[in-house]
Image 1: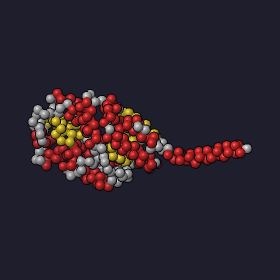
Image 2: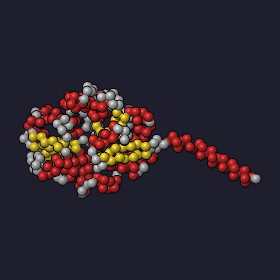
Image 3: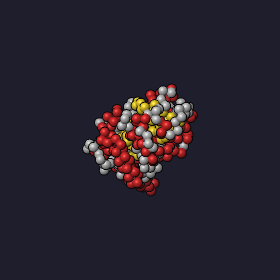
Image 4: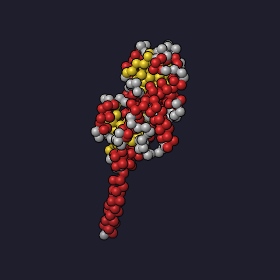
Length: 329
């Protein structure tokens, strides 16, 4: 009887422990975060680290990654609620908010792009681009191109008139530069890193241009964006995702071995390319995010609004309230 009573008492304690633990486990389950990424984009590297190390599970949510062939497809999926978040710049977020679409932003990277020049064309500064054939990724209203022109004007050069700009897609411009059909090219950072690995010269990074225009180079321009209604439904889930993202970046910043694991995903053709991609990715990691960084972004918005006008920034005269989700680290 004594043994039976002890057994029943032990069973009671075990059941009580399960009942007490159940609400805690339920409260820790934050549901699913559906991220939309370009199939071979750099964002997929970070999210792969999140999944590989179980950083989503550690934070109480499940990350689902949906791949798209182009930015436009990802944007359509996002606006149609097929995914919860994508990576875009906060300028796009500001335009949407000015149109009444409540979208918010969390930093992803401060890496944007760079001007890469052929080493055999005698280009060592911006003024040397006069009379040169310059590839420009994007269109005439690309924000990096506008900032580059603004800095050139400070040096006494009307870059759009003095050089011969050629607008096009980064892969095409990169190949034209390697073949010698272009003298220099302004391309996004992964393409710039690959060109550096092939022996071409990095003339100036857009982060340097940004700093020369009075905005800290570490001010992020790219970030995870999501609808405010989705975020407000579970602020804890947004915070958990942000922590997982930062944890993944910490691994990528410190571990060269992690980059060896990621090598197939980066499609690095050789060791030099992998090293260049790793270095430039790490340079774009956002170390802190708070009121100072938000104020710097607002200052950059004012610069871009002056450079590009309504065609670039839309109806917004200043950076709309709510553009940045209120998380600090």
